[in-house]
Image (cartoon, rainbow, N blue to C red):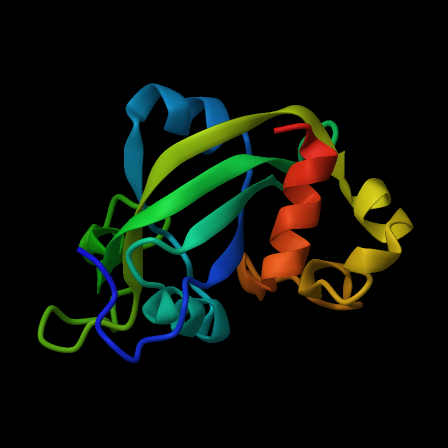
Length: 160
């Protein structure tokens, strides 16, 4: 599925996951997955903005070390997140209905694993990355946009 005439070029994103919940190695093994469980309205809106072909920096949060560990590509646009309807899921939202779902998920496919994790310390030390949202005080969003230049630089730092 390609872009329609007049559509913007691909967008780029950073998505966080705790490696003990779902890691880059899990994504590599699975090939693709639905990026679900996002329960912040602004991050949800970013998921809704993703399009097929958009590229994603995969960030291990709460890891040792914490940092960007690889890339993925969006292969499925936002759909209702099924975990919001499952009472056994941590993502269950009893107020969300199938007729009016609050939360969504996008499908991503493994693209690459970095030779080295790009730690938060490395991101902070690189002047070209000073504007990244992940480095902004108080930003705890699990999904954020990144610029093409930021994406390229992080990939370079990761040795991929």
